[in-house]
Length: 145
Image 1 (cartoon, rainbow, N blue to C red):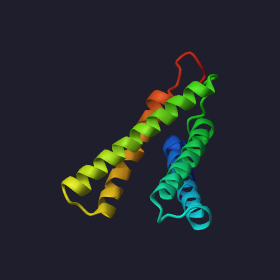
Image 2 (tube, rainbow, N blue to C red):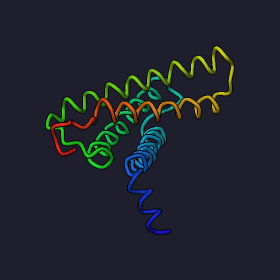
Image 3 (cartoon, helix red, strand yellow):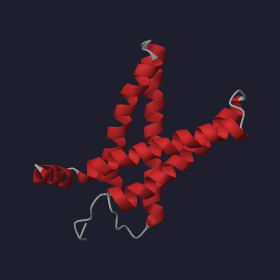
Protein backbone atom coordinates (compact mmCIF):
# COMPACT_ATOMS: atom_id res chain seq x y z
CA UNK A 1 0.00 0.00 0.00
CA UNK A 2 2.78 2.44 0.98
CA UNK A 3 4.67 1.71 -2.23
CA UNK A 4 1.55 2.40 -4.29
CA UNK A 5 1.02 5.77 -2.59
CA UNK A 6 4.72 6.61 -3.00
CA UNK A 7 4.49 5.71 -6.68
CA UNK A 8 1.43 7.94 -7.20
CA UNK A 9 3.02 10.86 -5.35
CA UNK A 10 6.20 10.50 -7.43
CA UNK A 11 4.22 10.26 -10.66
CA UNK A 12 2.07 13.32 -9.90
CA UNK A 13 4.63 15.33 -7.89
CA UNK A 14 4.54 18.33 -10.21
CA UNK A 15 0.76 18.60 -10.15
CA UNK A 16 0.60 18.07 -6.37
CA UNK A 17 3.22 20.75 -5.69
CA UNK A 18 1.52 23.09 -8.18
CA UNK A 19 -1.78 22.78 -6.32
CA UNK A 20 -0.12 23.27 -2.92
CA UNK A 21 1.78 26.29 -4.29
CA UNK A 22 -1.51 27.63 -5.65
CA UNK A 23 -3.16 27.28 -2.26
CA UNK A 24 -0.24 29.12 -0.63
CA UNK A 25 -0.44 31.82 -3.30
CA UNK A 26 -4.15 32.24 -2.59
CA UNK A 27 -3.44 32.63 1.13
CA UNK A 28 -0.86 35.34 0.34
CA UNK A 29 -3.24 37.10 -2.02
CA UNK A 30 -6.19 37.07 0.35
CA UNK A 31 -4.09 37.65 3.46
CA UNK A 32 -2.32 40.69 2.04
CA UNK A 33 -5.60 42.05 0.68
CA UNK A 34 -7.32 41.71 4.07
CA UNK A 35 -4.34 43.20 5.93
CA UNK A 36 -4.20 46.15 3.55
CA UNK A 37 -7.94 46.82 3.71
CA UNK A 38 -8.11 46.31 7.49
CA UNK A 39 -5.18 48.49 8.55
CA UNK A 40 -3.93 50.72 5.73
CA UNK A 41 -6.46 51.29 2.96
CA UNK A 42 -10.18 52.06 3.00
CA UNK A 43 -12.04 49.52 0.85
CA UNK A 44 -15.01 51.91 0.64
CA UNK A 45 -12.87 54.27 -1.45
CA UNK A 46 -12.68 52.89 -4.95
CA UNK A 47 -9.08 53.91 -5.59
CA UNK A 48 -7.88 52.42 -2.31
CA UNK A 49 -9.75 49.18 -3.01
CA UNK A 50 -8.06 49.08 -6.42
CA UNK A 51 -4.65 49.71 -4.83
CA UNK A 52 -5.22 46.87 -2.35
CA UNK A 53 -6.16 44.54 -5.21
CA UNK A 54 -3.09 45.49 -7.24
CA UNK A 55 -0.67 45.15 -4.30
CA UNK A 56 -2.10 41.78 -3.27
CA UNK A 57 -1.95 40.57 -6.89
CA UNK A 58 1.71 41.65 -7.21
CA UNK A 59 2.66 39.95 -3.94
CA UNK A 60 0.83 36.75 -4.87
CA UNK A 61 2.21 36.55 -8.42
CA UNK A 62 5.74 37.26 -7.21
CA UNK A 63 5.47 34.50 -4.63
CA UNK A 64 3.94 32.19 -7.25
CA UNK A 65 6.82 32.83 -9.64
CA UNK A 66 9.48 31.86 -7.13
CA UNK A 67 7.71 28.80 -5.76
CA UNK A 68 6.91 27.60 -9.29
CA UNK A 69 10.47 28.25 -10.47
CA UNK A 70 12.27 26.55 -7.60
CA UNK A 71 9.84 23.96 -6.22
CA UNK A 72 7.24 22.99 -8.81
CA UNK A 73 9.07 23.12 -12.14
CA UNK A 74 12.67 23.27 -10.83
CA UNK A 75 13.71 25.67 -13.56
CA UNK A 76 17.35 25.91 -14.57
CA UNK A 77 16.81 28.97 -16.79
CA UNK A 78 19.76 31.33 -16.35
CA UNK A 79 17.91 34.43 -17.54
CA UNK A 80 15.60 34.88 -14.57
CA UNK A 81 14.34 38.30 -15.68
CA UNK A 82 13.22 36.92 -19.05
CA UNK A 83 11.53 33.97 -17.38
CA UNK A 84 9.89 36.24 -14.80
CA UNK A 85 8.65 38.56 -17.54
CA UNK A 86 7.03 35.61 -19.33
CA UNK A 87 5.46 34.49 -16.04
CA UNK A 88 4.00 37.94 -15.28
CA UNK A 89 2.77 38.31 -18.87
CA UNK A 90 1.01 34.95 -18.66
CA UNK A 91 -0.55 35.89 -15.32
CA UNK A 92 -1.78 39.22 -16.70
CA UNK A 93 -3.26 37.23 -19.60
CA UNK A 94 -5.05 34.87 -17.25
CA UNK A 95 -6.26 37.86 -15.20
CA UNK A 96 -7.77 39.34 -18.36
CA UNK A 97 -9.29 35.94 -19.20
CA UNK A 98 -10.79 35.89 -15.70
CA UNK A 99 -12.29 39.35 -16.18
CA UNK A 100 -13.75 38.51 -19.61
CA UNK A 101 -15.29 35.21 -18.49
CA UNK A 102 -16.70 36.75 -15.31
CA UNK A 103 -18.29 39.52 -17.39
CA UNK A 104 -19.82 37.00 -19.79
CA UNK A 105 -21.08 34.60 -17.12
CA UNK A 106 -22.40 37.19 -14.65
CA UNK A 107 -23.35 40.24 -16.73
CA UNK A 108 -24.31 38.71 -20.06
CA UNK A 109 -25.65 35.28 -19.08
CA UNK A 110 -26.79 36.20 -15.57
CA UNK A 111 -25.21 33.38 -13.55
CA UNK A 112 -24.51 33.79 -9.85
CA UNK A 113 -21.18 35.55 -9.29
CA UNK A 114 -19.96 33.01 -6.71
CA UNK A 115 -20.66 29.99 -8.92
CA UNK A 116 -19.18 31.84 -11.88
CA UNK A 117 -16.02 32.66 -9.94
CA UNK A 118 -15.53 29.00 -9.00
CA UNK A 119 -16.01 27.91 -12.62
CA UNK A 120 -13.66 30.55 -13.93
CA UNK A 121 -11.01 29.82 -11.29
CA UNK A 122 -10.99 26.17 -12.34
CA UNK A 123 -10.28 27.31 -15.91
CA UNK A 124 -7.62 29.79 -14.72
CA UNK A 125 -5.76 27.17 -12.64
CA UNK A 126 -5.59 24.83 -15.64
CA UNK A 127 -4.59 27.67 -17.98
CA UNK A 128 -1.86 28.89 -15.62
CA UNK A 129 -0.49 25.36 -15.18
CA UNK A 130 -0.35 24.72 -18.93
CA UNK A 131 1.25 28.10 -19.64
CA UNK A 132 3.80 27.52 -16.89
CA UNK A 133 4.63 23.98 -17.94
CA UNK A 134 4.82 24.44 -21.70
CA UNK A 135 5.79 28.10 -22.21
CA UNK A 136 7.43 29.56 -19.13
CA UNK A 137 9.24 26.70 -17.39
CA UNK A 138 9.42 24.38 -20.38
CA UNK A 139 12.15 21.82 -20.17
CA UNK A 140 15.04 22.41 -22.53
CA UNK A 141 15.94 19.21 -24.41
CA UNK A 142 19.62 20.14 -24.13
CA UNK A 143 19.68 20.25 -20.33
CA UNK A 144 19.19 17.79 -17.51
CA UNK A 145 15.68 19.09 -16.80
